[in-house]
Length: 482
Image 1 (cartoon, rainbow, N blue to C red):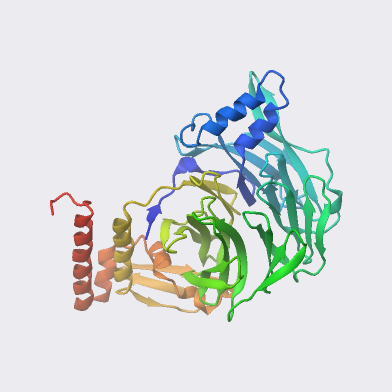
Image 2 (cartoon, helix red, strand yellow):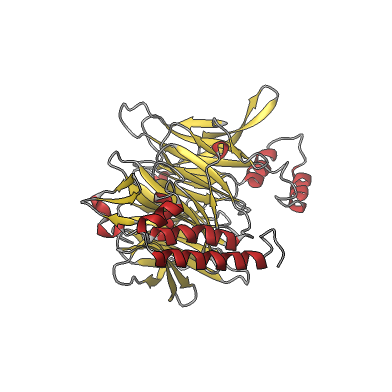
């Protein structure tokens, strides 16, 4: 088990706009494109200098920006629809309290967004069409600030096509894919917008797309149907990704291992919760399916270095519509939790994105908040394993029951009740240990243990404590000598 992150006020900011999309700005590429327009800057010399520097070694010159999109939609709610640009400072682990740039859209809300990897700009999907936006520099006193503006380039092929629920670019920015609510899959060459594939009924309703690292394949997922694999060169479907039992394919992402082997991950939902399905990208056969939570998943992504998977699981929906959930960072090698971010947001997390160097994760939520979490090496795994495991033992001593659509935990004079909506089904109350810890973090472990009144549980607790001390001592984590 990995470590548990607590909220850092500076890395969590609210921007007054319900957020549907989040991504990291490709800073080097954007800066290079902008500098090419300035005669007084030697672009080639700058590019050579940047190639010799790694992000870690040049953290002072390499800047991190988060791009966010969302809004309140049509109507007179007063909530704007906009794309926001915020800056993240690694040294202070802080996200700018106000966006450094903001572009409003009137009554049109950008439901989806994709950043062009080459640094040319971004594309947003509005209710009936898609629009292309470019980066530009805005003079602020003596400084040049980064901004975003509507491009003169009109995406005619993506006008009046209805809501697009998925947008994706391949890694070299040469191919764009768009998936519609109507199930239509469109693939274009970029930037010419020459059509490569136009499949009217790829799915009943298309909800996610991802390109393989080499750009040869495109995977599409539909609503409650099978996944499909498309050969980009031949513009044909080459495989079908079959489901098992009651699986629902939710989200998909490719990755690449250290030996350059490509891997496909699909976040799936069953009546028992969320799982991660791994696929062989040569045979397109299922390799494994690993249950990771007994709660539904709303967001999923993979780090660029392939070491971590990120997902958001929902474990509580209150009667007032607020949600509580955890962001999990999962080790891709052993599928164990590397880091758990408890109650990351008050609303559903709609987007997760790793920075290009895999050093940070941004999460965006319907509660108008964005949060950046630093990704650190987990070198104290045993300590965290015990930290997580001990409350699990205590949870077995708690007296719990489920009256109607709620469950209660009694501990001494306190009663904690968590409500949930009928739409999640009866399995939603069957909380796995990770979620149970989050629900009961206000309860002391000893009071949970005492609530059971079982001598056997106390003995088990003492044994586990002794085992924990033994491993910690061997790792040199305890002050007394071995």
